[in-house]
Length: 112
Image (cartoon, rainbow, N blue to C red):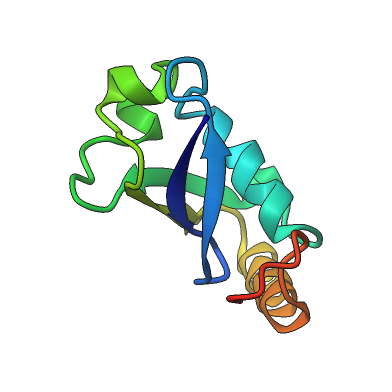
């Protein structure tokens, strides 16, 4: 088990406990959503990329394990929201992200 940092859709940085050799880049979405909690859904995540090298991301490396993609323990990944849908859907998504930020993370992150 290893720990990586994640800057979620709410802008809060939190720890994710992962298995570097078996957790995939695509698997980070569900892990991040579990920490951020409702009303944020996994469908709201557009991309998760490595902060130090944005070319390492879900689009390019989604099926790869974190180790194969080039991540190491302690790295920071950044979540960006999905930017599709009509104006009303995007406004709702922003509202849900703001609500989650106000209410605090589901995992009771004391640094939030």
